[in-house]
Image (cartoon, rainbow, N blue to C red):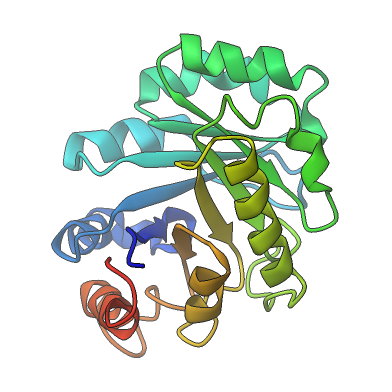
Length: 229
């Protein structure tokens, strides 16, 4: 059965000195989502994008943006990223003391709430919010470390999350895979139940090979014979 598969461009992998040009290529390539990594140097060992970049991005394109909060206190920034233009706001369950409250606050603020899970975090951590979220970001590598390869067992986790969401009645939950996405692994992630793939240096941001929009089209064509993208 064919289903919609979203290609999400990881903006942190773009060339910061040519950001506008690369955003234009994402528009030309008809990117479905822009994945926006926010990191504080504490929850993960590096720093990420900031809200002013998102504000600028929204003046250039209407492509939906899913913000991925890899920070110790994601609740404090909900309104900041709402005003900056975020469409999805994904928080790590590992950094939330009051997950249900935060999910409700995101929804009340006008964004679509989502949760993110590190590789070793159990699916059961979503039990009391699974019906209330629009997206789950599954880390297929350990977060904050660029270039690591797919952890193979995460393919099984994708299948389990799809079953878990369906059993809970949230059949429209978007399962987004972050990390380890390549031209080789994409097919297996989709077959396991993924709805969105975060595309970074392993797929579309490879200036030594081709343009961003051409790489997007190549990836889309590779899997469109099986799934509707």
